[in-house]
Image (cartoon, rainbow, N blue to C red):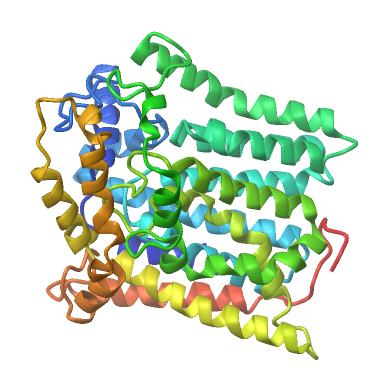
Length: 468
């Protein structure tokens, strides 16, 4: 956890950036200064006077708003610490989940580091977007399911808390996270399913109530969430196969390219299914439902970011597949199939880690694909249409989609070249003019924390799984 926290803080920028982040900050500022939820400055005009986003990130941003002045620090700077802290918590929850599956502390640490540092969780931890918060909720939901097998009520409470965290961060979690996690916790807890269901409901209720009250304050209806009067049902306008390819294999946003470690699903599927069909099904559902949902979303590419932003919350769902591969790394003698799978996984891990470092260390706002999308956007006549109406027209969909399919604008190659030249660096600590002492100290802390974690006991323990 300490090593992951240090990595996130070191790579984070000196000041927050991003349209969504700014809207969330304005809500937090209004909550502190005038006890409202109003947004006053929105260049797109789709989140005024109220934001369409969940309130979770704004609630976290209230803390920097309150302590920034006494500490002599700008909230814009302190906000950049939120997601690195959440990433460290994700790593901790994944570690506990891995231990519940009966692996050693060393193996649990490897699994935790793989998911925290070799997936887009790391690059998005250097932003102030809400996806990391949703990921924490997903990780907690998985942990709750694992615990529900032995302790139905406790597992249900943890799963329900995860649902609540995810839902506060992004309302789409009521569709993409809540049903899957709730059903998983109930199924895992049989014959204690009633107590598990009660635990899920009790723990999720505060988030449901907060969201309902927030919707009432914004839209005068507890069930309404919208972009400045634009019906969200009209937002699913991208052709399915266009978005599906875009989110899976396109050069601009394909998850296979931006996180090759996702192929561990194919490598570890059989082993994961043999150990726990329920957990495997839940994690596949968390992955696939998000892909299918956002394949037709008007902005499937997720704007400015690294890789498929909307698939990032599902990264903790790689747990059972990565875990089963790691579980076999220390088994000897190995079969030919196991040895081959281990080598393939090692290659995927190394490549994935390198890609995340590139994404986290460089300023993706200057990507050629983003510049080209903005250029094409400007060429489409506006006709004085509202932003969302214009954005969902066929010419605009083509203008904002085609650049992400263009291999000549491949962001991974572009940003890797820039990183090697020492340009477009994002981190506050990676710029040449910055003193090397903070970076050196951070590196020492990272290595000490990593060494301590990997040197702990190596005896497998049966914590809940019943199989090894």
